[in-house]
Length: 257
Image (cartoon, rainbow, N blue to C red; front, side, top):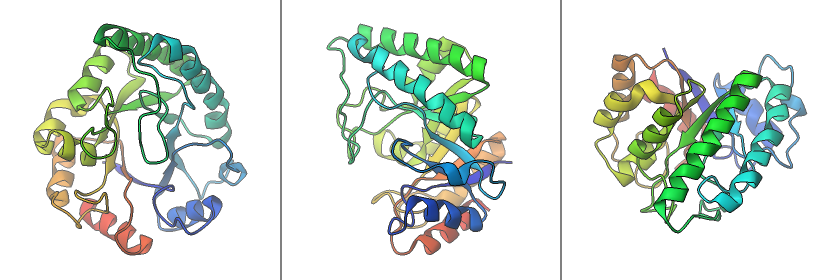
């Protein structure tokens, strides 16, 4: 059975980060978050009441341009001691640096061949690091129609091809229902086709990127599909509450109970 997690960067945003994490854990969820730089993570260390499911495991650079690869890998290496410090064994990856509104800020090779070759090389090296440090990484696809114009991996199939080519159980897909619905639709069929490659799942409704039950996605049916295919990983709420954070967490729990 899957576990439920909540992103501390999208809920309780009027509170300090440390308090957001506590509120999420007190509500009975695992905790995930985006960037770790500049944050006090001491409260997450050796605290059995707070379990971190995942966080962003790179800092900058690009895995889709040869000139940005070393910076990208340096950020991956720098993030590993952070994961070890807070007892987290899973980290998120994207193609490179994104701005505060999700805009693409990383370099992208002009031709598709060096983009894909560089990404493959990056993931192969990350797989070696993951094996050495007993970690797992999940690579996300992002929609290009609303927030992330120009992103190189907009469809689940794109990430699936890379993950399959690398061939490591430590490199998986970060499957996002929200991005899938916007970019390609047919969410249930995508889950059925690619679920063996999923390492983490993100959910939010469309439109608005609010919690399940506020938009057009039939989340109870989505949850049933995850149960039918036997998904046993983490499903994380990465949504901006339509009203209160408490209500958003309750709707999330109801949809996936």
